Amino acid sequence: MNQESKTSMTMFYESSTVEEIRAAVASGEVGLEHYVSRAFDAARDSQSRLRAFCYLPDTPSFNRADRVAPLAGVPVAVKDVIDTADMPTEFNSAAYKGRRPEHDAWVVARLRAAGASILGKTVTTEFAWRNPGPTVNPWNSAYTPGGSSSGSAAAVAAGIVPLAFGTQTQGSVIRPAAYCGIVGFMPTYGAIARTGVLPLAWSLDHVGLFARRVADIAYTLKLVSGTDTSDPHVSHIALKADRPGGRRIGVLRRQVGGAVEPAQQAALEGLATRLARDGAEIVTVDLPAELFETPAYALQLMSVEAAITHGNLVDRTPELVSAPMRGLIEEGRALHATTYARIKAWQVPMALRFDAWLAQTMGLDALLVAPATGEPPRGLEFTGDASFCAPWTYLGVPAVTVPVGFGPAGLPLGAQLVGAAHGDAQLLALAEWVEARAGWKAAVAERAVEI
Image (cartoon, rainbow, N blue to C red):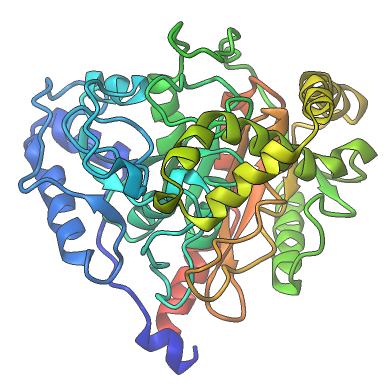
């Protein structure tokens, strides 16, 4: 471990899992306030170094639910593009400073109904696009935590909260989760209603989850998944019921996002070897050629829809909007309408063809792919390349990343599993099996010895 890594470490806190919290609270071993208070103290204590939160109340906000409620006593952090009626939601934008929503977002209301306590709002890049906030990577403050859900990923990774929510329009859940060494999950498009969530691109926006264990995400997803007629772009197809899933996993000859760092490639190959040793069937595959165009399609789709959503704000007050956001809107306005219409028209047919290729042609339960090029970039100006996540966001299929080890700079590396649309439960069950064989605990223990 180099000296820079030693001196740039951010303090980690002892975070219980959702399962552990639920057991302790439901049994009466601790009160509803115990874990929320502990998380609040950790959030306050870490702010000067980690800067994961853009808003924390003066005192903890406790949900006085019945102690047997599904999330009673669980502190949850929420990205600052998701409305909270009792806290500001400002989108990391000077134009929305002081904004106070009248209502909770649909997903926040579901969390509160399940007994969760909303701890505070986490830092996002401006409008969930590229202009970053101040959050640093918990493993080394000289590196980005990724974006746009920067604060949510960092808060979970640092052990402040066991559960956080973010959004993904390109790679904003999967990539920061990989960079911070935690589990990130993007469900099937529309699986969690987006009412009360700031839109960036309605054809791509997903609400996603962060945790340190796959089991916590699988448990929570059952509580917050669903549709809402107020979501104008709702997917009217519910998640599939649980069914037995296999362990036939495809690995790519060529990553869809481009070349990856040697350490990332070695991590994927090492994981595939361990999975095969424990009974998985590992199949080397080539993606359909059309999928290699999807990162560009996702970016073009987003630029047009962002221009429609946020263009009027730029016209009125350009000085209050960052250069990256103004540039995105300019790109969207310059794109020919027929190009947008063609890319949009391809989206659902391509998703259906991908599902058929994955499940029927290849007989796969999931793909094992890179979540990013490798370790996070140094500095806070660039939150990383989303090309390794954007194809699955464009297709609207579920994706999950689990931590697998560390790269040469001592920063986390992840592995992404991608499944068929509406097979979220099956993908998470497979991810939990993979997680147990990923070697993360051993890698963390070894790294701790080196520090």
